[in-house]
Length: 101
Image (cartoon, rainbow, N blue to C red):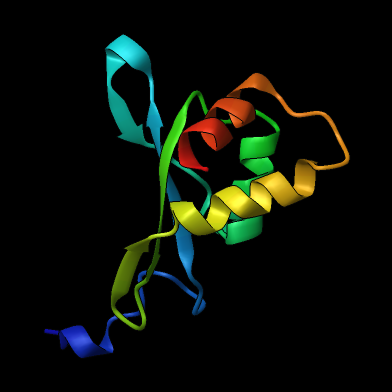
């Protein structure tokens, strides 16, 4: 029997993973599925800007290697705002910013 400490890591490379709690209205809220290669801070910001989420409520980051998790919504919202200052913004991204800023 293999020792659990010898098992390969769940996440192949050390990285901070970001997930989005999305609100689907009458269907409820859910953490959105994402390819593990596209779960970094920049990907989440770009996905908000492009309207990939229905109604993003909160963004969580976690680091399985270091053993921490936290709400990073307050860090993501200003970055979304910064990136759209010179361009147009979709209604879903606008709603996210209005709620979080």
